[in-house]
Length: 490
Ligand SMILES: Nc1ncnc2c1ncn2[C@@H]1O[C@H](COP(=O)(O)OP(=O)(O)O)[C@@H](O)[C@H]1O
Ligand SMILES: [Mg+2]
Ligand SMILES: [Zn+2]
Image 1 (cartoon, rainbow, N blue to C red):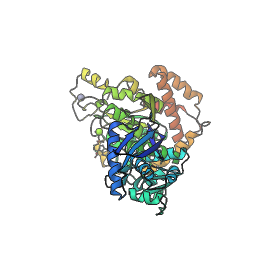
Image 2 (cartoon, helix red, strand yellow; image 1 turned 90 degrees about the horizontal axis):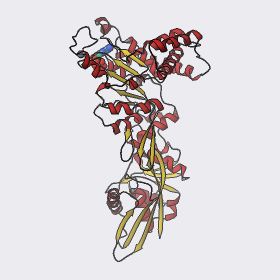
Image 3 (cartoon, rainbow, N blue to C red; image 1 turned 90 degrees about the vertical axis):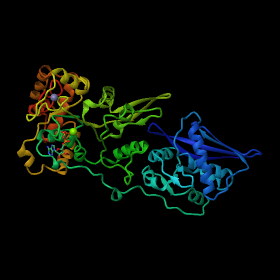
Image 4 (cartoon, rainbow, N blue to C red; image 1 turned 180 degrees about the vertical axis):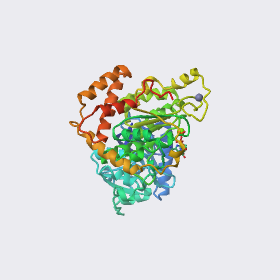
């Protein structure tokens, strides 16, 4: 007899239904084979399923030839989430639980050798796939049940295979899991802008970047607060909308980077990859395509600290997400698309030794070394930084000044500015502002892309200022953040 358990797996970020079929026949030579999985994963699943069943104190059908097929066979499957549905299909095939119960339930979960059910990455996406397949119930590990419940289906949380079996036999009632409420979520720690002394221009650029979607480059000598400032951009971004939160949560769930204690991400993510990370880790990709840092920063902030230290190919591959908000990764039989709309904050020194721009230090770098350093970052990439800020060494009295404005106060202006930006009819350029922009195209000079970016920044500045339209002063401020060579020379 053939029994079937239903599950779902993730391809890229998208769930796909998988049917786990088990065929058991009495045989002189008992065997257990799984087909439709990659070879190694298959061996591992066999061991876990067999010892999981035995350790749940359930008889292993040892007089049977058992074949498990994961359909569709053409779909490349990986991961350990098939353990639980495989075990349930085998148990139904050996009449240890009613087979029909498996047709209105889906299941997902890894089994440990002692039969415990462990969470798997991408549970929220699996649960969405289950819902789309028209199944209303999902059995999964208790730890990931609140996350699964976000998909809007009934979720049966289990700790152990024995519990799942008792439930399916109707011997045990299990309360469906509730999605996480905002009360039981730990807030991530975000450092506050109040700690930054001086650097008014850098703070202003951050506020503009938070309001519109703009990229910031902070350039200056070491120890001026560039990294400090960059880390404080997430703290002035408003919380995600519910749809954004689900979208961001799905990406982090699939990547296995959901913070513990936070099954849903309500705040914009912050990612700061090291310059030694591989291109696949930063942009995304790999044999089985995985979202990279660019996608993990989706709707949040990507900080590239010490920009010129990143290998140039990595930086160049960030141009696509910076322009289109997506990363497309080649995979067998096509492309996987990962969303990657983030605010980029980058920092850099002005020369290899770092002393340039610092009146208290002597720079010994030759012009050749300085231009070699700057050329590590291409013109095309520099062109995508809307806000380039020179960070001077703070003066003694600035460092002794009282704390700056806290992030919460800045965030209020950001929220108000965004609301004005959404009103498309407001905030047109005045004629004088347009004339200024046209003159700037020749004088700065600005590329076509640069012109459009300056216009967008000016609009954000007008929105922050509560203006009715984009005035020359807004344009002038927007232009002041662009320098002809991208990086200020001192
Ligand atoms: N503007 C500033 N206000 C307050 N502290 C600062 C400032 N600039 C630097 N610091 C102090 O110096 C340390 C190093 O700053 P950092 O942001 O790492 O500098 P950078 O990235 O420019 O080299 C910070 O942790 C902080 O203690
Ligand atoms: Mg730094
Ligand atoms: Zn130098």
